[in-house]
Length: 124
Image (cartoon, rainbow, N blue to C red; front, side, top):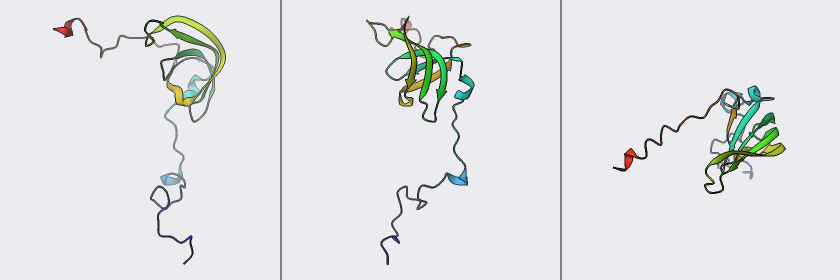
């Protein structure tokens, strides 16, 4: 019996050797960032940073290339709050591991958080 004809399953437990997905097709991303290329986007990152700029490119890992990028500055007293003050960054590569949201700048507006409720009435 040779060393390669082992009955022990390979990593993953299916003895397939890490081949293509079931059915032989590549899993497609649910993100449709192609629609946003060359348009103004807003990017929210882990840690609270928010960026605005022109999306120039992306990859499967959601690494983003953003041109004419501006970072919204955080409030010095409360770092969880973002101010309207910005600083210019220029051409930026944002690692996909840090991206939590990508949205078009045009056609979006901020709304009140419906989950916060009325804090004054809740303290009775």
